[in-house]
Image (cartoon, rainbow, N blue to C red; front, side, top):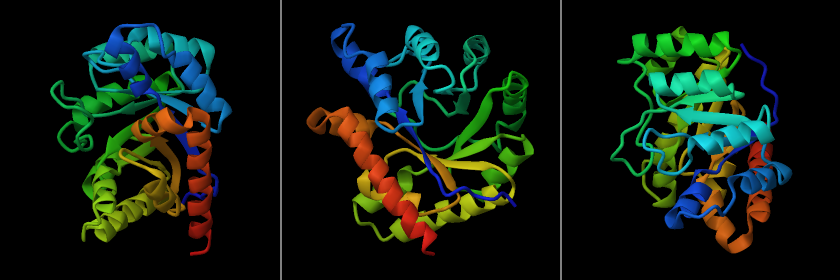
Length: 254
């Protein structure tokens, strides 16, 4: 069983800084400035999703992040040959494999490792051989965990969207969704897999998920960027870190 360090890391997703930039086809706001502020304000890594349609982050952004902040990029990408070649060329610290559909507004659900097991094996092995940390973005499902473990993936990022929606809308399913995440986090940790969580988090859900001691990293983007329009990026990240510390202290009391 893996011994858990109580520290919890924060990855800040800056995709929607690029969304704002691209809305007018300008050179600002700067992706590099956003990443710099995030890291100086408490982020441990920078997450960016290079989509097939390049709707926000583009290839130049990825190269600039790697050049300016070596060892800090968590590259989200689909399991395609194009993305594999890009990852092997730029050598990010980490790659998180996510499902991707061109028509979706944002990532909808977790990766189906069960049905894509053979494809993912061919994808994961070259990344691991290159020394890149590998991660799957999956739903809190035991079958997905078992298949992921069989591929020797380094990390699992649990899709927290269902829990966050239930929490935000005070749905009766909120408690059950939290238990699903907690249970999968424990099972994954017992198998030596590093556990992350992300998608849809705000201050309150960040605090709650941070109370799960097995979760070692949270990745948060849209809420941080949205909230920063009113409060400033540095302040929002510090507030998020405060929520993480508060949540972690609750976990330590369990």
